Image 1 (cartoon, rainbow, N blue to C red):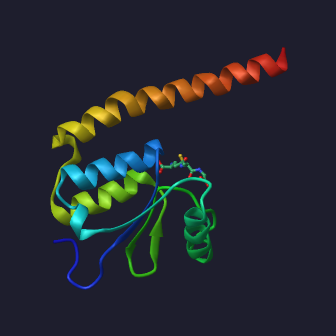
Image 2 (image 1 turned 60 degrees about the horizontal axis):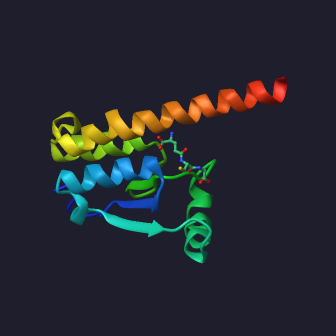
Length: 126
Ligand SMILES: N[C@@H](CCC(=O)N[C@@H](CS)C(=O)NCC(=O)O)C(=O)O
């Protein structure tokens, strides 16, 4: 049980690798039903609605985002996972699908993204 009085809300963008991290943790730890999930697809009216809702609460809107407690908004995927893990007494390192994603596909996509940025910079400076 995460909270008896407030159901945390997570805002997740479809196909976002950071959002998938949060989504996988919630699913594999069995916490998904204890959280309200507001999913949206990039470029839709649903996205605009969520951005309008979040804007007054954040310096910069980014995803994933979560309202962990009333008025407490967080936009860092690792902080969101850590909050739910601590509340529920679950160790993310012991969730094999989550760990495989974070250490495998997620880590690789971050590495490729950085390499791509560096290559673009080198090309434009040449
Ligand atoms: N440090 C953040 C990075 C999240 C991030 O870069 N999210 C992208 C989506 S893939 C984002 O929100 N970009 C800005 C936007 O969509 O407005 C985390 O780990 O949660």
